[in-house]
Each structure stands twice: as C-alpha cells, then as structure tokens.
Image 1 (cartoon, rainbow, N blue to C red):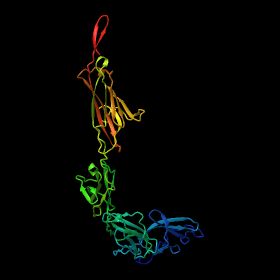
Image 2 (cartoon, rainbow, N blue to C red):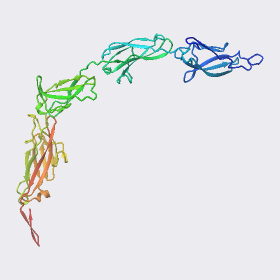
Image 3 (tube, one colour):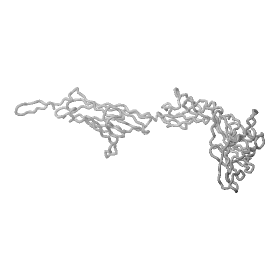
Image 4 (cartoon, rainbow, N blue to C red):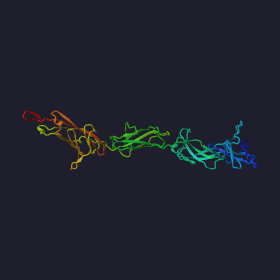
Length: 454
C-alpha cells in the first residue's frame, strides 16, 4: 500500500467450481464475485468506492477518510447460482515503523467559530465551520450548551438549536459553547465544539412585595424575587412604620414576616431587604404598604364574670330567692371604638372552649335572639345582641335543697363573643349559689312525731 494512493488486493483462486466447464471439469473462470462489509452490527452492502473485479480477482479503490480497515465478506457465485463465501480483514494501515497510515486517510477535525458579545441579553452566532478535509456544503446541525462547573460537564440548552442564540439570565456566570454536527468533504461525520465563552452577568434588580391583611394582630409577609438567584441566600430585613418621608424603626422586626400591632394603626408599613444574589450583586430592594393599618382591628377581650344567688328559704322556700340577672358584655372590651359585641356560643363548665354548649339562639317573638342553656343547678338565658342574662336556680335540685346557711355551690358557664371583624374571645361566668335556712316542718303519725327541715 502506497500512502495517499488507491490500493488493490488480488484474492486469487480462493474458490473453484468443480463442474464449471462444459465437459464437467473444474474451473475458476466462470465464477463472479460480490462483497459485503461489517458495519459493527450487520453485514451491509460494500461502499461504492470498493471495486470488485471478478475477471482479475481483485479488490481495489480509494478509501474515504477515517477508514483504517475493512471486514469483508467475499461471495463467489457460479453459473448455476450456487454460492460460497469467505471473510477476511483488509487492514489499510501501513504497519511500518514510520506509522504511516498508508491508504487510510486520517481525518482532520473541523473548527467552529462563534462571534458576538458574551454578555447576558446579547446574541451569539456560529460565524463559520471550516474543515481541512473540505468544508460542509450544508446539512449543519447546531446545539448550544452550558456548563456550570468550568467546562467539566456540559448540558444542552433547551430549544437552542439554531445558528444564533440569545443569552439569558440562566447562562450568566456560566460557560457557553456551540456544538456542531456535519459531514466534511471526506465524507466523515464530525461533531465539533466551539471554544467555551464565559457569560458576563447583567444585574437584574431584585424586588420585594408585601402580602397579608392590614389589621392589627395580622401577619404580613415580605417576599423577594430576583432572577439572578437566591439559592442559599439569607436576606436581612428592616421594618418601619410611619408615613412617606417620616419613618420609625420597628424594634425587633428583623424577619421576613411581621405581626401588626396597634402601634401601627393609621400608619404605613415599609420594609427594606439586604442581600447579595447568586451572581454576586448586592441588592437593597424596599417597598411600602399600599394602605395604612386599621387602627385597633383586634379581637374583643372577654372578661370573666361573677355573680351570686341565694336559694329560697323559710317554709317550703317561701322566702324568695333563686333568680339573678346581669350583663356579660359590661366588662368586656374592644379597642375598636364603637365596635359591636355578639354572643356566639355558651357552654356548661368553667374551662374555656370546653363543655356541652348552645351555638344558636331562638327568637323570643320581640326580635331578640335568646340563648338558653341548662347547667347543673339552674338555667341561664342570654340575649345574643346585648349580653343581658338571667340565671334561674332550680330550687328542687337536691344539691341545692341540701344547702344550709354558710354552704355554697358554684355553677360555671363559659361563653364566646365576637366583634364586627369576626375576631373572638372566651370568658367564664361563675355563679355562687348560697344556702338559706329552711323552716322545720312537723309531721305526725299515730306512733311518733318528727321534725323535718323544710
């Protein structure tokens, strides 16, 4: 094999046709030959440049680039269409000490050139694809890639398959290259990459927003958005109350959320964040609430109530007792001036929020909604709108009847009130039941007389 020239290999009389002559004797001359090559997975038709000369029993041709050897299957066919075959490897590489590639044409890699400004928002372009083996005349495919680890690994950029690519914030601070697929003039399929370009960041200013309900007692949340990235970043926050041009620092408010208080009433809320984004840019976005905080929009304060009642005394409870009245709302407060208080529920027992209860009242026919609940020793009725109540002691209750002067029982109810903003609170009504002196009753029969307390 002479380097740079075509090759020719004479395979000689590999096959014989034992009855190929007219007289039935053997011959070589009546055979025809064809060839297939192994492509790594199957036998396929020989390439067009590989020439089989049946008359001269030769294989010849000028191989294209990047073909160091051929696995060939040579098939002989006689005049009767009978076939036989053999396989061999045709090594096109010259095994001399000079390491000449002989008829093997070594591939020369192409060069991909990219132009443009490597800055976020700018457009890069594959300006040329050149190849010493012959530039591609068409059929070039592009894929832009990005690397986040200095070029060790590369990831295809989604939908970036054109000759141009406009850089986004996702590539800022990373490396970008163009990967090109084509077939050169030597018919070699190549994949080449351009030099990697480090993409400069253009700062995308972060912004901060506030969300929540602007009423005392509610929580407002500050949320930062920054397309330059906040992964692993812990911003610091500073909160202020006041009016534009006159702000007062809120002591202790340093997190991303803040619970409004009455001190914020009729004032705006301002928050300033400070951080360095993932592109290394310092940011101090700030924002001001769009409305002032509602003054005193807080839950009502239900205060515990206490009352006392004395059981009926005298003969057969002839001395009146057993009923008292009062108002649950009198000592309950609400910082909202003029805000309303409404009964929501009343329950038996002194544990706030616990116990069997009544959650709705009944119209008394006069437009008043009355809640009625029976406790251990009596019955409590409450006006839903005014808080006025009446407690009627059950004088027939055995525990009540057993009370003497100085004895007492405690009847407890807990109740829930709400204001016009549907905020609520719970308090307890404790009623002390005092004993009274019951007159003695004389009972007689034929044998005895007993004195019994009435």
